[in-house]
Image (cartoon, rainbow, N blue to C red; front, side, top):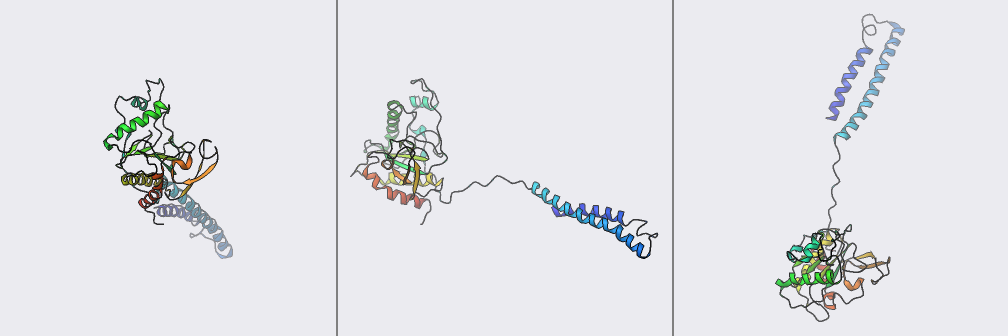
Length: 301
């Protein structure tokens, strides 16, 4: 279409120039003969020819500019992670928050008991690591009681420790059910409160129970943690088997404030903080969880 437009405009203007350069008195019956006549004809023809060449060049440049403007550039295609994994089923906060519960008031930004409003969630740019915890609570629970267990954990952290919300981003029970913990959206990089010094650009997942040396770690639980890690880390195309460099924001961690620590992408709480969490039994399962998460992301090497 652009070439056709240029050709039409060019032909119209060329005809006009040729008519002016070859009209009566130059090439007509009254034209002069001999050398002077030929010279006159050349002088008469040259300006239109030069003008035509300049005109074609200008029209070509204009046509290119118009073509660029006629084809506006759309938004850049979003980057798609090369190694992603499907999102596992995650039960929302409403699955464990009871209607009328004080924490529901906080959720709405109206902590009537404390007389203060709940601050909005904070976010990082992405999640590049995941810290695994245990809740240091009894193991022999019925999975139907998990919501009540999470409410007790939340009450201890908010009412007992005066945190603004539960610290873990996710919690997993012995049956492999995953619950959303801290508010802000399970698919977003919510800044948690789970690993002192390393809450930024990380997610905290708590295995409900106590998994010290000799404790049985349910396979359903480790599979759920692996699926959660594969999806959450896959959003930033992070290999679950890799190491990551994180900067400590608190000197009470295992590292001085401002110090860069190189940690496993899927780490235990004790990798960043002086604690026995997540327990020796669960810590021993982390290599298998890393491999399984990488497999779910489709990584073969």
